[in-house]
Length: 112
Length: 114
Image (cartoon, rainbow over all chains, first blue to last red; front, side, top):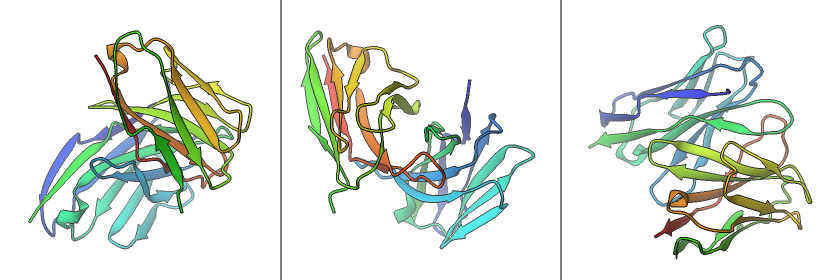
């Protein structure tokens, strides 16, 4: 069964801290690894994504680190702010069907 | 820019009732998906479509049916609602099935079955 395992389930950091969310996958055919951000009452929104041909991608304060051999990838949020408080989902996909397999989510709370 | 629009936003059903959730997208996307979101379970794929007139089962299809008669619309039906179908339902669409293929999600439908 294709799975994406995400940890931790919840995370509390102080403003300015660097929360790290980790994901692991099993299927080596996956070739696309996005992260989604979801605020309460809203749908998930694409935050940042990476392909397996690079080991790191940065967009603003958000960084994805990718370890192909370990089949793991992680999201780092630099200088976290209370406005970053949300639920974050990692996902993995591959093949022409376009189906993304989502992790179970991490609820991040950034304290002022 | 409407993006992906879901109707209704909230609904309460009695066990055994039926209903249809409507998803409409105005981005000319080929692929559309229905997910359900439950606490601690993440997003689970119910059904999806790779183009007008096509549908396929996802991870949790039992108790649901779908139709994609028009490219812009993807309907999710519950023929006989059960309390286990209490959830938040999200529709999403994507331009293609080839990476990078970001999903655009709707704002969700919160369904309660009593």
